[in-house]
Image 1 (cartoon, helix red, strand yellow):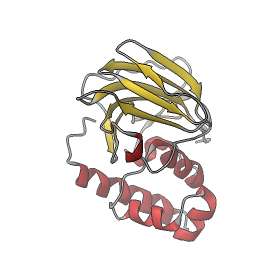
Image 2: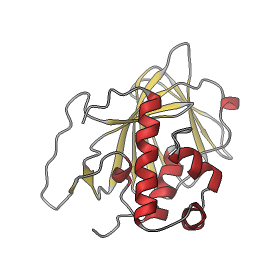
Image 3: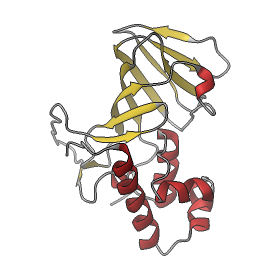
Image 4: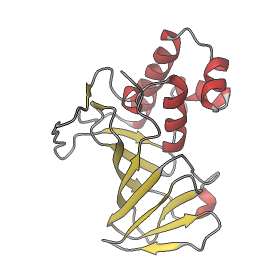
Length: 199
């Protein structure tokens, strides 16, 4: 499960999975656009491996395709059942790298999780490096593992966090994270899943 591919290969593999999931349903790009709320150009670029999607767009795409988000990272998985117990060893993840963030998606082989845990690296240091706030249904938890982080919440003053500091918030509120200092910050983020499709 360790993903040591370079970002270009990761994006291409990710794009192929999206295309197959869409085509398996017999849908056009326009169909998926309508169902997910994502622009046709965004879906097309993701399918061709030109761009990587941020978490909020991944969540919209999963809802639009009526699949578990894990389907974007692995072709097979085990549904999490009551009483299950799963371990992720260091280095076991699937990576999604965007312009500002690197997401190490934990437990990609476990489907229908009620939470999505991720280890993140924050590459961005200034707010202007972002196109827009990220927002998605649910709640979100962040704790700083290394470095310092500024959390920007739409309509609120920025919050500054150091190692060991945490924040918990309504992720439908626009939010951004930026490393604060001269090195990339490492964070643990847990989002509750947008939905849990029946399987």
